[in-house]
Image 1: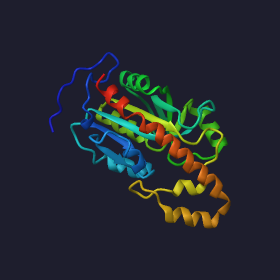
Image 2: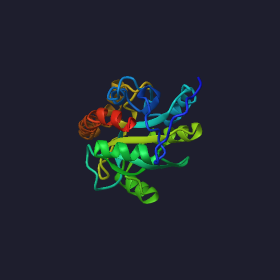
Image 3: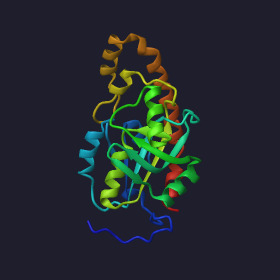
Image 4: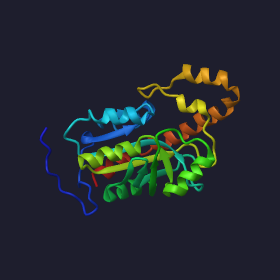
Length: 234
């Protein structure tokens, strides 16, 4: 597909990016359902390795890449449902800059906080690990998709942005059963979670808390659909 030449803003992002040409990268189907329906979406199922393979099959003709979904809080001042827009992304594979113009427009429209987002190869569930990751990266939040999405955008020389909502906070524990809670296509894996709870029944209370906080974070993301449209047309 031939890529058109689009005028760019002083911040770097195109003055008008059709949502139909912005690739959204999410971990779960429930996150994908909150996006404008015309946006193409890749769902990782919470697996960064699988996500990188899926991104290799991404179509041409894209004008931008958006990482979208819930995240774990690293900054103790963030509460469940707070929104964060990345200025930079840092993970085991390297560091990447977000498009400043697009990110500023997103943050302004969504009422989100701007800052570093950390990428991780697996769930960061213990408060001590969260504190260590924040000390090492200065990141506000961590998730499993943003680093791969940023790497893909850099390789394609595409504008990149990340919009994430805090689910678990910096001092909350994610139970081990939550880490296996998704199927490869991003749907709840109820059978695997039930089996994990049979082995560790004491995790039930923490898992119910995770589910409740995830709903709050998803609700916050659901309120950003109009802001996404406006930021991409800014």
